[in-house]
Length: 369
Ligand code: UDP
Image (cartoon, rainbow, N blue to C red):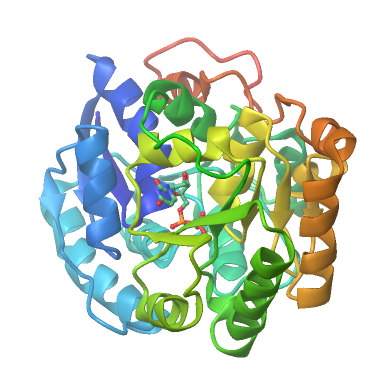
C-alpha cells in the first residue's frame, strides 16, 4: 500500500516528521513525501533538521502569495502527481491551504484522506482565516481522522459525519519535541527573558503596530526585561519589526532551528505568541503562555490554566506581561508541566491506525468506526 504524506509549511513539517518516520518504519507500507513548499525557507530548515528528504518537491512559494493563489498552484501540481503515482492514501496535517487543496485533489480522485490534528475548532470561519475553514473542509473530506485531544474528538463526534473512522492519538508535537530537545541558546544576559513569536495574518497592519508599541513600553518600564523574538520572514512582519523594534533589550533573531527554538523557550520565563504550535510546546515544557489572538481552537490551553487569551488589545497585553514578570507564584501556577497533548507516541498510533485501515494490523484500542 502506498501512502503519500503532503506538507507545505514549517508547522506541518514539524508535526508530520514523526508521522512520516513512523510510517517509514513499517515494512508493509510504502511511504512517499511530497513537499509543496508553500513556505520555502522555513520548510527547508525543518526538513533538514528532521532529515526528511521529500520524494517530490513542488516548489510553489511565490512572493506576496494569496491563499487562493497557493490553492490553485497546489491543485495544478498535485493533481497530475496523484494521477501518476496513484497512492492508496493521502495524509495531511492541520489547517493550511496545502492540506486543504491536497485533500480536495485526493478526494476528487477517490483517494482516501487521513487528517492528522483533526477536529480543532475556533467556531469562527473568519478567525483564523482561512485556517478554520480549512479544518472543517478537510475533516469533511477525510475518511480517517486523528484528533489529538478529547475536545477535538468531541468536536468531530458532534459533527456526526458518517463513514469516517477516528482514532484519538495525542498531538505529534510532543513526539517532535522529544526528538528535538537539546538545542543551543546563548547564556541569559538578563534575568527576565521572554520569548515572542507573532506573525499571523490577523495581526498584520495596525494591530501589529499597536502590539509592537506595547513591547517597547514594556522594555522601557521593566529594566531587567529582554524580549527575544525570532521573526517570521513574511515581509509584512519582518519589515515592521525591523523598523519599530529597535531597542537594546529587544533581540530580533532570524528563524531558529527547531532545537534552538525549544532551547530558547525552555529558558524564558514565559512566551507571548499567536502560534498554535508554540502554545502546545509551551504547555508541554511548563511555560506560561500569553496568546495574542481573539479566538482560539486550543481551549485546553486556557482551561488548564497554562495560558491566557490576551487578544489584540495592547493594554491587556501590557497588564498580563507585567503580572507575569512581577508575580512568581502566578508564573509557577501557570507554568506547571501539563500532559494535555499526549505521551509522545502519537505518530506510532497514527501509523498503526493507517495500517489497520488497510487491514494490515490489529484494531487500535481507541478506534471508532
Ligand atoms: N519555530 C521554530 N523556529 C522559530 C520559530 C518557531 O522552529 O524560530 C517552530 C515552533 O516551535 C512551532 C512552529 O515553528 O513548532 C510554529 O510555526 P509557525 O509559527 O510558523 O506557525 P503557526 O503555529 O502559527 O501555524
